[in-house]
Amino acid sequence: MNTQKLLVPSIRALVLSGMIAATTATHASAQAVTDPAATVNTLIGTLGGETFPGADTPWGMVQWSPENTAGNQTRTVRPGGYGFNNTRIRGFALTHLSGTGCAGASGDVPFMPITGNVTSSPSADTTDAIYASNFSHSNETATAGFYQVRLASGVNVELTATTRTGTGRFTYPAGTPATMLIRTSNSEIGSSAAQTSINVAARTITGSVTSGNFCGYINTETRKSYYQLFFVAVFDQPFTSTGTWVDSTVAQGSVTSSGGTTPPQASCTMPAAPANLHVDSVQGSTVSFSWSAVGGATQYLVLVGSTSGNSDELFTNTSQTSYTTGGIKVGHHYARVQAKNACGTSGSSNQVDFSVTG
Image 1 (tube, rainbow, N blue to C red):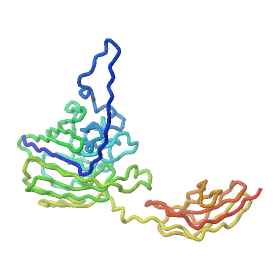
Image 2: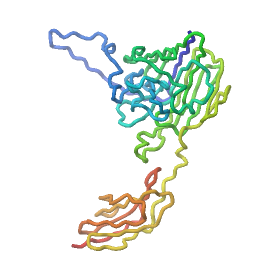
Image 3: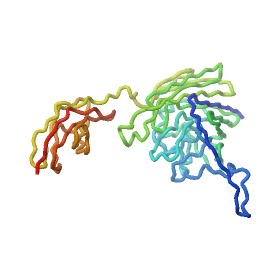
Image 4: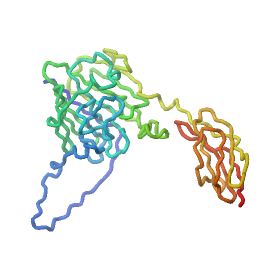
């Protein structure tokens, strides 16, 4: 067998303390469980739920767990990366969240063992037809702090974790190339930047990914990166060859690569605050507003309040530079407008005031 062992420590640390209080059972027939962890089945919740079955510890930094695929490289099958009914794996990522409610969060830096050579770009394998493998639940074990699966390719994967590290053993069938893909940029919701470096002499691979974008496919205001994750992978076997890829181009023998799956957030610019807000007319409870257009704005928010500087009510999202609304209550009011695009919402325009009489 060809065996590769990875040690993947994270660079950032979060230390929390916890306490477990034990009480003595009063029921005479109750029997204490000598090894509670042995009764844990981490596959619970993966059939229609939002959990992951991989290796983790309480408050751990590494959640080394499989990323399943249904034939779409850019869309995870479930929010935790794993769906019990999807028996095909495209990688084993270092980070995961349970119960996110959105189809994708974390899933950073997936490792994928394959029994062959890389002859085409894994990024071009958009349906996960080439660089993924089927598996059977009969060849899978998921317990507290340990995950194992034998892939249909013949590779046996064993993963475990400590508070700050993960350790993986990948055992390949005899007589086959033992290749490890590290898809640094392929977080579950993509990335705005990533870089990877291979040190052949030290048998290490290091890198980082800038990601986030939590629920970003739903809400444009969260469509951005907000964390950078670093990793170091130490192998116990020497490298016989290396290579990298960017988009559809494979560079055999290369030891560095960089680039995210989405444009950098730095290219995104919020619109300026609108100017020249006017109250054009007040007809009973119907009020008309207008303002100057703002470059790059896709929507405008008209805000009305009964106190200067406050906005008690959002009257509209409009793409126009004028708006008429009815039903404003009797009294003195203040209005302002903001511009909005996919990058965010601007500050407020000049404030205007008006009165509605009975």
